[in-house]
Image 1 (cartoon, rainbow, N blue to C red):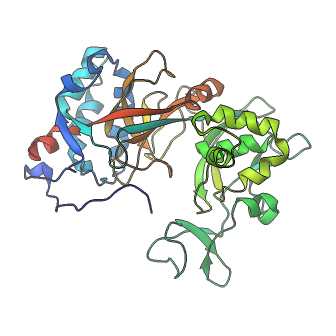
Image 2: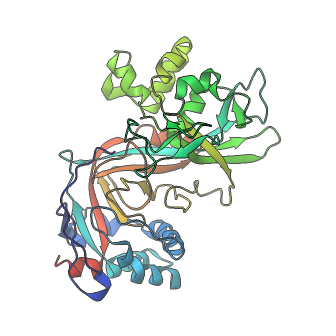
Length: 389
């Protein structure tokens, strides 16, 4: 259901037994000296993020992506990371150089790779509706069910991973955004919290998580629980198509500014995105970290990256070199990230979404990231050497 290119795969063998395995031809082995800025990157935060994935892998098996980076091959690096965490820049870099080999990722759908940014919004919210807080975030309804090839009815779009389970047992397309915001789910008690601005609600849907500042001073976090199943249609593309924004100027900030200037047209634009996101509450255990994402570990600002999970394996170190990106500081952006999340718009071998953190400052960073980039993945040495380099 994704748009990433596919290629035939040779049968894989068990890398732990030293027999050859098949890495994708989109991966080209290089030396660490060929990775731009490798020696200058302070990889301690990347190691800390990697260690969280290593600990989670002890209780959760990550799916091997089609690039062929076997999840099982990470075992030696995971064990080393959990046993002896480096405490300085050199030790962190040595850890990665010892346990991994560097591979350049050949983009499968464009001349160069491409990165965008995302973040965890932080907004004021209320536990009950009022004239000031009228727009809810909803929990997952009980008639929304996951669908796959086993229970997908004939005629249902294969893209849909969720659908509606009717009382008579039928499964069909779920309500879309326009129907839900018009009241299709009213009266079910699904409201987690209420917000003042429908645009804030929409961008929380886009980001997949948020911190909510409640009237009593408490901070409540919501994270993704499910979606209606429909395809995502971004407002930036719509506004560019109808000539309201120049395509090269589309950012989260320019979209928000347009809605502020045209409040009467919010529903007209937002309802063209039929996808609707449902949430669940989650704790804020460490304010410095982001929400628990698809890899089931909390995201690390500036070091976690969302990737195409059909191609990449969660927990893989991914080095991103974006020469023109200065949103995180001085250009170029050359930094080791850890693959810990995914997204429906993140498709392709050299495509990533950089997690910028939580709150307004992180939003300012994430909202302007739309840059070409070179991608390198670190492949466990037992796998890289077994594949013959």
